[in-house]
Image (cartoon, rainbow, N blue to C red; front, side, top):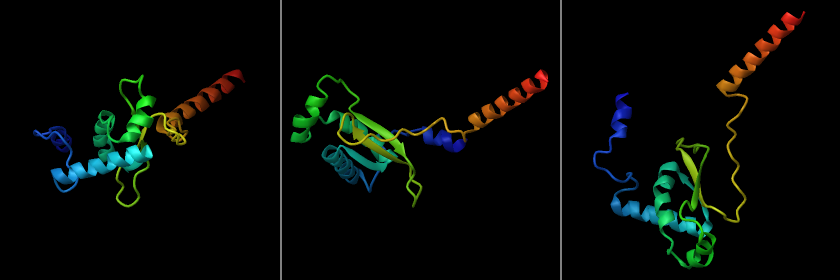
Length: 142
């Protein structure tokens, strides 16, 4: 419990620690943002994608592609230009990974994760309840 309390207190820090210092953090965010504008979808660790998302939605005048392609696409939209999706963890260090993309791009859509799997605890309990109810109804009918 103590760990979660300490993690929730920011101690005056405004940004996440990424890279080797403030300059390295800026270069990292710049490279991620450039990749996002160039490819319209990138894959990176969740913390980096989450930190970069705010900059991606503010930078409307980054390069000419923004004016020619992205600005007309979002002229009627007041915010929420990007979409973040969690993907499976990286196999080497089990880092939480994510994909960030501009909405309305021409790339094939990412599959939505199935939340109603029959293997979840709730669905297993419901399946057991249904079986018990059907068995009790069969016993009462005979």
